[in-house]
Image 1 (cartoon, rainbow, N blue to C red):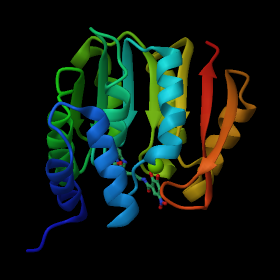
Image 2 (cartoon, rainbow, N blue to C red; image 1 turned 45 degrees about the vertical axis):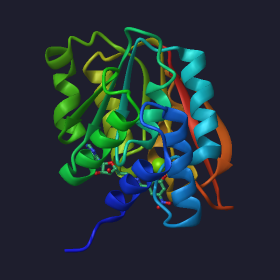
Image 3 (spheres, rainbow, N blue to C red; image 1 turned 90 degrees about the vertical axis):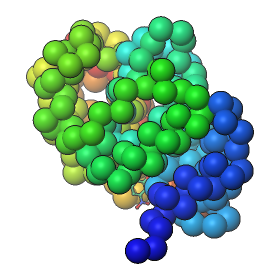
Length: 214
Ligand SMILES: O=C(NC/C=C/[C@H]1O[C@@H](n2cnc3cncnc32)[C@H](O)[C@@H]1O)c1cc([N+](=O)[O-])cc(O)c1O
Ligand SMILES: [Mg+2]
């Protein structure tokens, strides 16, 4: 049985980056995806926008929906202040196994809780599993037809507070039309689009930042 793309990505990280150096892990993945095999990481261009929002929010509790190989997990966790936590949800065990090793290689395992399972089942358990009161920042990057349901689930579970920030990837490509329509028209959100490009390509894509107004 040959290797999978996530496994080849992990090997590229172990070969081309320095253990304990998150920036070198990020660069190794971007180089692999740009020059060897495209993969659906948020990438360096949108990643810089993500970095800016993380730094601005400076979250003590953050959530990521869709870990995949852990690229954005590393981007977010490397910027977190001491004592803060990033919870990342991934339901594919093979992807979770690769992501765990990428996160550990970057030396960020103490800041990250990777939870295996479907977001729809796990979000309602966040309070009891991790004692989470509310999330300061949620990075949404899982199946595009789950964005709206999970945003509304976060609201219903009381996991958003006045000022909580939702940051959604791929709102143009592949696109998340019903999510976009919701956050842009709901009086409960103040939403803004950050125009960019689909990772490692010239195609348009962007991130939507939506502040929950309570
Ligand atoms: O399809 C894309 N992303 C879907 C990402 C999906 C990831 O989230 C997990 N997941 C899904 N529902 C889940 C529910 N619960 C937990 N993990 C879940 C999947 O196991 C996968 O690891 C995508 C596609 C392109 N593209 O150009 O085609 C570009 C991008 O940036 C993308 O993010
Ligand atoms: Mg994405």
